[in-house]
Amino acid sequence: MRQVAETLELAGAPAEVSVLPEEYVRLLGYPRGWVLEGRARELADWARVWYAENGRPWVYARQAESFALAGDSIRIDGVTFTSKRLGNTLQQAEAHSVILVAVGAGPEVEEEARRRWADEKPDEYFFLEIFGSAVVEHLTTVTGARLCAQAEQQGMAVLPHYSPGYPEWDVAEQAPLLELLQRTRNEAFPSRVDALESGMLRPKKTLLAVFGLTRHADRLGRLADLVPCESCSFGPCQYRRAPYRRAPRSNGEQVVPRIPMLDQDDRDGSVDAVFRYEGTTCTNMGRPMAFDYNVKLGPRGEGYPIREQRCAPAPGDTGHAHMCQYIENPSRLMDAIDSERPLNGERLNAVVSWRRTASGAGCYCESASRDHKWGLVLETIHYALAQKELEEDSEP
Image (tube, rainbow, N blue to C red):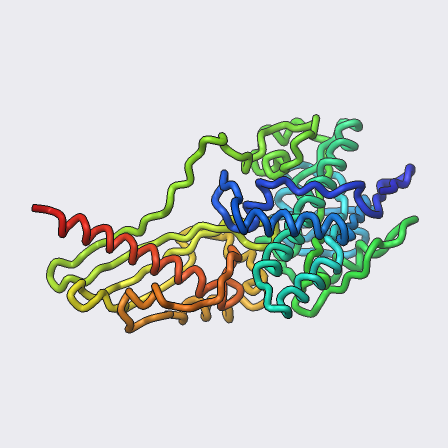
């Protein structure tokens, strides 16, 4: 990677891409501390090797020539952006400049993933697709760490990055930000990137970001939301100011399965079950999100027929707004989630023989992913009720 001496400009391919296993596992949707085994471990290792041999990651970064704040507006090199959240962050830190960054895993990984899907190999598709997302996250992290190192030497600090599509920044502003990034100085932009009308990028394993730059490094310790280290997984960084919030726990950590809350109505024997799913988005840096499932079942004597079903974001959840399909068309995605009631009217036992497409995606963007989660919910309720019946039947 090259750097222009007189002004900050980085362009090219990183020396290596070393995605941390715990970060890859998190993006795959497993609980923190989970260790891959068997087929999952085989697929994860395969995706890593394939990318090392065929992937072409790239990075571009440059410091803006001009920067100004005015209310919710941020003006960068003559282009105005509107983001209340980003504007507040820059203002609180008394930022004097910003650094524009673009990273990409390269089109090769997406093309290979599509080929695997066409060849009816959904497992290979999924693990390679998620590894591409992990590469983007890794590149953003490492680029941020490198910027932090340079800023530290000059008595400055780099703020956490922010991107169009994050809360309070319209994803439609991807296009002007991309155009701004492509106004390079002495370096060519490393890869072909297009912004669609929806605001999504092509190739999709690409991220555009803005890093604030401040001379008031002392302020970051007093403003918790502005400490970039808490969202940075770059372990060997010598400029760390705070622990990484998603650091793995001890090797002895136990992953406890989630058991649904069951409430039986003594009048008619019906059962209300509540289940909370906690996962992460597949993109946008793996944002945590939680959905609540509410299921009403008929009495045991009728085989627990499924009478009512509902799935919705848990109270206070904001992570769901970072899902790709939500960003593209929020009402369409949320209407689909709200209207889908698989196996409704059937006995709960039907979930055992329900044939559905396996999907480990943490998000709700595709119907297969939503069916997969409904299957997990109904199977868990089925198991919990079976255990409850065994206990009741064994009582003297």
